[in-house]
Length: 156
Image: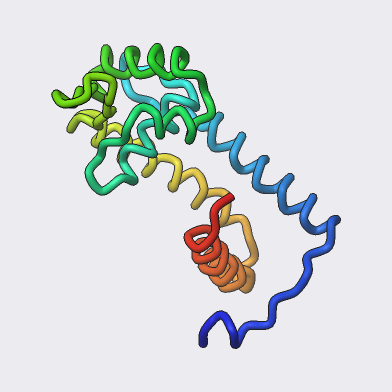
């Protein structure tokens, strides 16, 4: 079945508002989820940087792209990256040909930390979803698959 075979519909403003509220609630709950790693305290923006890096196949992203993706100023991002560097989670890579081009790269320690934090968040979400009635799980799986596909196909 392809996209042409699926009947799409106009979503009501009420459902859109309710869905947006639910997404934001999940987002803030996940931000509040404790990531227990000794001596490392991360803001949600810092974790967002680590997650972006971990999702990139090369585990590195230009600073300019990070500025856009986390919606912070260059100065704010630079300070954030410095803190992550001090914790050994990322490193900066300067390009010889263009000194102004700087990449932020995930270190092995940063990759391990991000995996551990993501696993912890997945466990927290699993605990939450386990409160649903069993017959609703296929619905959640189906909607998750559709939303994941839609998110990959469209830019917000």
